[in-house]
Amino acid sequence: MRIGDIMTTKVETIAPTELAETARYRMREQNIRHLVVVDGKHVVGVISDRDLGGPKADGAELAQKPVAEIMDKHPITITPHATI
Image 1 (tube, rainbow, N blue to C red):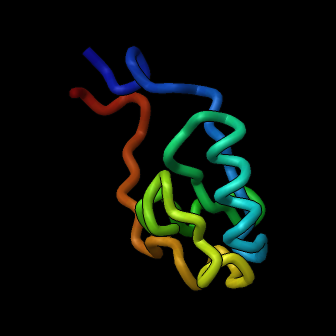
Image 2 (cartoon, one colour):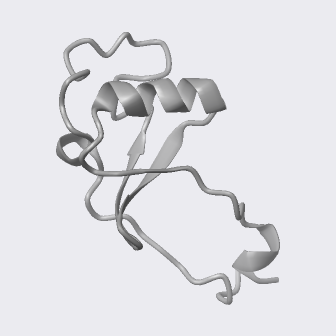
């Protein structure tokens, strides 16, 4: 079996310049826990609800910080052709 057989193809993304409060809002609205951070077509990071204090945190202390300051800057990626 290959990664492409089980992966989600509609991935929600956000720019590194967007504010953390925007990331939190989008995660809550989409009922998701992660956003892939992209600069153009390049994956530059990933941000999770945990990075923002968890799903129930208000995140006021992080609200005005850009995503780039909070995201994990070393995402691990894999091609859809790789085997599970």
